[in-house]
Image 1 (cartoon, rainbow, N blue to C red):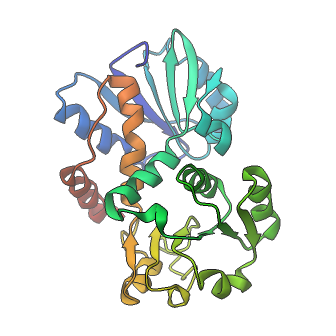
Image 2 (cartoon, rainbow, N blue to C red):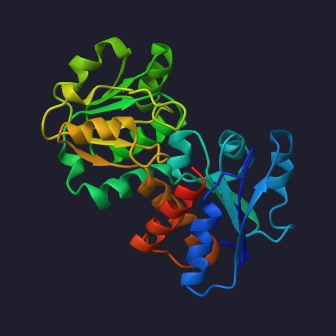
Image 3 (cartoon, rainbow, N blue to C red):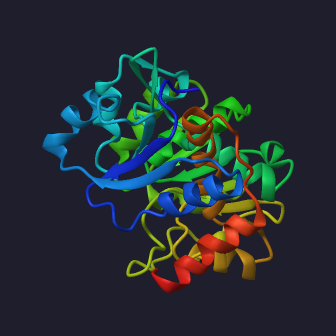
Length: 280
């Protein structure tokens, strides 16, 4: 648990779109905790100073989002194993006055599939679309769960190859042109690209190439059913939307700052979906 209980944040630039205050505010009310959680817009040039003065400003810690995750990685004195492997920090807390960083994205990804697709880790080879920070978190989660064949597909092959080098055995890099062959025996397809978001509704892969037992998941959660998930559902495949990843990745930070490991409940999911309908 962090040194100073009672006040936490999410910081980014911009940050007004974040649903983290809604999530943590729900938990604070649900567990009757006299704490606060706020969104703070921090420009990139101001982040190092902000991180260095958390305790002085009364914070127990907070979440870090775009564009600060790599800067947070550099700012902390210690990191957990997931942050070290992923190369980014999304959660900050203080331990005896020392700034510590973690990454909960991999945990959130796996917990979402645990909740909605039991047995997913036995699905077979995995195909990951994209080679950014989210892809690193997904690869870490898959390796933790025993996946030995992870195929990273990216428009720029060199970026996919960087991830193969970073994570080692079992990770291969590919260009989109070979996707049909890669999908033919895949048990899990994960989209980590922005394709499918509102205003960018292109299909990142054709799920008709997947076998009947495959699971398809998308880290995009606005819209809740992306074009990829809709196409997979029409194909008759099991689909898992990205909202659960957002909810589950938030829980460990709450436990660090407020001393309670919160539950991800249907009521919380409904609250966030209602907010998404008001402001996509």
